Length: 174
Image 1 (cartoon, rainbow, N blue to C red):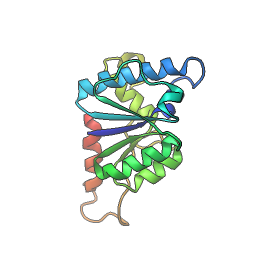
Image 2 (tube, rainbow, N blue to C red):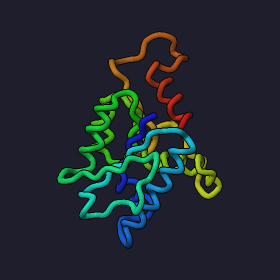
Image 3 (cartoon, one colour):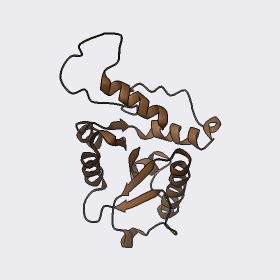
Image 4 (cartoon, helix red, strand yellow):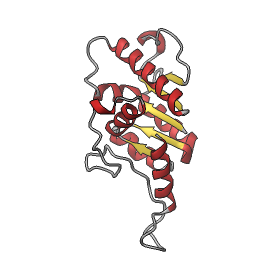
């Protein structure tokens, strides 16, 4: 599974982008590396800025591709990666613009709070976090979403659509 994360959006939700942001970024990337090893997923995290101006993680981290947007917004890079991945992509961001544009590419859109919970569970830290979060989309946009291509659903009303079944299957693997 290919996961693309809006890096500063995720770090910002964890307590803000002040203080030693480079240390927060390195700790987050190291945590993502543990997650990638544990789950076997391909993880790409995108940060705003240029690597030289902001600083790279101290050591290259296996399993995580770290990208810096270099002269463009990280949101635009995430959207471009989503378009490239299509239905294979899982995009993690709570930015409304990113979510709306990536939704049309067919991948799964996941809010940072939901991914944070799944990350904690995968790393064995679920006891510290709220595990009562539902997989259904919340009104504030932090749940999982899948766009439905076409109009109204037809067929068996008790069976989920193909895209919804694919979304649930992918979220179970996170």
